[in-house]
Length: 315
Image (cartoon, rainbow, N blue to C red):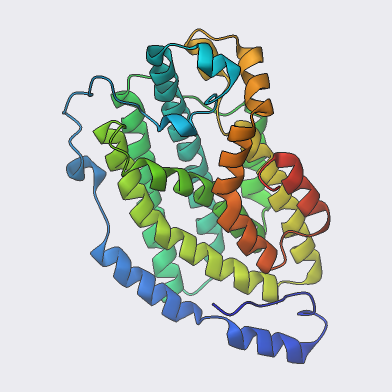
């Protein structure tokens, strides 16, 4: 795709017209996504065999993606305890996914509230909301199947998200959407073909990857458009709010209660994860395509870039 540099978009009308000309037509993008949705959508309740027993000796998340992998603590853990940690981290990530999907659904509703209800753009947004409803139910069912507890985010982050849902501007909403979608998507693309992982988890991640690819495309196209057309103050607010969201997301990514629940010293586990070069590489690799895109459209600048670096998601 041809890139658009938004730095002068609000001060030079001629440049703005040229930049808009390089953007893909919003309705054409939506029509293609609607067509893909009609061909490649799934009902997890019938697509997956929820009654099949869990498999002995299989992980719930690839070991290389478990937060403590390759730390001193990991090396002292038994294989059974490592698998148990993967079970709890899978439940923690599914809980995070549900929290995020609920936020996303509300942001999408706000986005289309004042737009033409007969447009393909709005029809696709409603289609995506239906996808997210199914995903949230699917994640909840996966948690129950794995017989692990749900892991809600902290009260602080829960309430910060409440503020975000209320005050977020359109570009801020789509930037945060991509933050939540693309890192988990990268991990799930490694998970669903991995035969070491429980079949039910692989099935859940396969469905999510297929359907989430459309959501990412929709959000990227709209954020690119918004960073061209939004006034300068809104562009700057998007940079800061996206950077803060990255910082919060990196903290909330794995609930530290998982360490306590598998019999580990919680403080020491958290400290080792923070110090882990492997974990830092995993998280930055997961965010790599996203940060490249955000940099390309002018989101990773100024204070926002500093916040991304402090999150550990940007080298």
